[in-house]
Structures are given as structure tokens and as C-alpha cells.
Length: 429
Image (cartoon, rainbow, N blue to C red; front, side, top):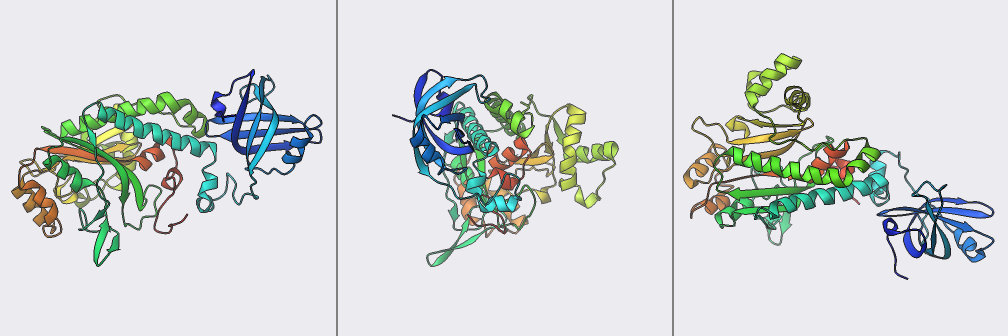
């Protein structure tokens, strides 16, 4: 008999289900098992006198053992899980579990040591399903707008972007680096005439950060598109993309996220509010008494970033806030600047956390070369500068961290939302 997922089991028919034994009450005359698979849970009820062979097998079971069970599924109003139960006549023990080394309330690092067990929890199954829906929705939105998906190399011959915070690896008889982002290759795709591209893949950052939002490897979702007229084109693309994806998450998982995490999935209204960085600092001082020194006002401080959650809600009733007009010294050399030297880019803050840096890119070779020289990077990025010598359309783009989005959706730390977390002190499992 073929296996049926528990979500598809109905009363009045015979089924075969497989999954983990999440709960087991083994009484003298009766046994009650709760079997869980990725789609749900089902109670299995055994009358031992009528099923002595099954009783022998049940005595061998432990919590989290894996079984396959066959039998009639009947209605039972006293059963909390959907008002139905299986009355089995066949049970196969696929695997017997040792006593579990962790519990649901174990310390986070202990749970990370046994992550494959920790991932069995309902919350983590929902988290992975939510990430799947989110990523699929991002793809769906872009494919409908004629974007194509590319896959850029993660082993690169020169340290990307700033040249710092990169992992160096031995590559035969030379050195290579793990890519900090697909930024340079996204722009190469623009020079190749692909016009609209996106990519999802691993990103590596060799930074010794021990915060709840940093990891040395995470999943990025990046896009780039040609023939932009201004940074407004880039911001508009992102706000439309996120509103679409959030609506998909809310539709499919909103109720479950509310139930298991106590978080509301709020589908944002478009357009998102926009503020210049100087105006942000002015409002933070006026409303909350927050001040920073003048030499720190070219970038957004961590404390100011957190306060933007209140600022955006108080001023606009929105969880999102685009912040523009950063100092050129604080932005990447490849950001286009206007006549006044102001980078044509932005950060997007959601719930007090930066989720995106986006910009119009500088596509003119001589200007780009000069800006790289200003940062002392012209030699490091020679290969990248070649992309712009033979014609390149104006373009812009941004990147999102899928793990950070999940973290903010569910109110968790970065360790808890990655399938396997990688940080300065963790390389296993």
C-alpha cells in the first residue's frame, strides 16, 4: 500500500502513514500514538487484546522512533487532532530512537549541536515551509516580469568589493576567495545584455560578529536590472516585490505563524515611506532625544536603525522605511553619485533592522575607475572594471538576506532560522 501524507488522510478509508512517534501513551490495555510527518499529526489507537502482535511492537517503541502504520481511519469527536484516529492492523518499526539529548527548551547552542533533532519541532517545520513559500514568491514575481535566473561562481580569483572580510581558500597552486556577494557578476550580466537577472545562493562574510543577526554564511536573494532612470525605479521594484511575497506568505502561513510564533504577518502597503538620512537623524532627535556626533551622521548607527522601527510607525504607520542620501564615504564605490556627489542608493529598514542595501550602479568606465581609486581599490577590482569598457546599460539592483527576513517574520535569532548556522565558533554539524 502506498504511503499517504497525514494532511491527506480522511475518515472512512484505509491508509498507510509514516512518520515520527511524537507522543506515546502505552497503557495496560490500550496504546495511543501520535504520528507526525511534515504535513501534520494523526492519533493511532491500539486495543492490545485485539492486536497482540502490535502490542509487542509498541512495547519496543520510544519517542521519536520512526514507524509506518496501516489501518482504517475513523471519526472520533474526542480526539483533538482533527476529530479522527487510525485503528491499525499493521505496524512496521523503521527505526528506534535513543533517548533524546535535547529538549524544546534546551539552550540554543545545545540545540544547534543536535540541529537535526531540533528541526523536527513544529515551529521549525513551519519556518522551512515559510522560507520555501517566500523564495518561490520572489521568483514568481520576477519571472512574471521577464527576469532570468543566473548562478554565479562562489569561488572567485580576487577579493570582492572591499577586499576585507573574505574567506581565503587554497585553490590548487594559487589562492581563491569565497564570494561576499554576487554583486560584480550581477553587473557583468548587465554588460552581457541579459537586462533583468536574479539569483539565490550562498553568501560568505568573514566577520567575527556575535550578534543575533549576523552569520558567516547565509542565503542571499539578489537581483539587477537595466535601463533604470533613477533610484526610485530600484526602490519601486523592491517594494512591489516584497508586498507580493509577503501576501503569499500571509495567505499560506499567516494563521500558523500567529499560532506558533505569536507574530502577525503584515502585508505592507505600497509605496513604502522614504526619508533622507539627515531627516531621519533630525526626527530621531526631536521625537526620542537620540543624538549622534556630526562625523557619525553619514551612516546609520545601529541604535538609530533600531529606533527606525518606532519612527516609521509613528510617522507613516508602516513597518518599512527607505533611507536615502548616505555619505559617499560610507557607500560602495560602484554606487552612482549625483551632481552633488550623493550616492544614488538606499537602505531598507524593516522592523528596526536593515534588510537591503540597493542602488543605481555607476556604469560609466572612467567614472567608476575614479571612484574605485578614491577607495584605494582600483588594483583589487581590475577584473570588474573590464566589464564596463565595452558598453554597459544604466542599471541598478539590490540584495536580500532570506535568513534575516525569516528572522524578522518570526521574531527569532539568525541561529534559529538557518537550516544549519555558520558563525565564528560553529562549523558543525
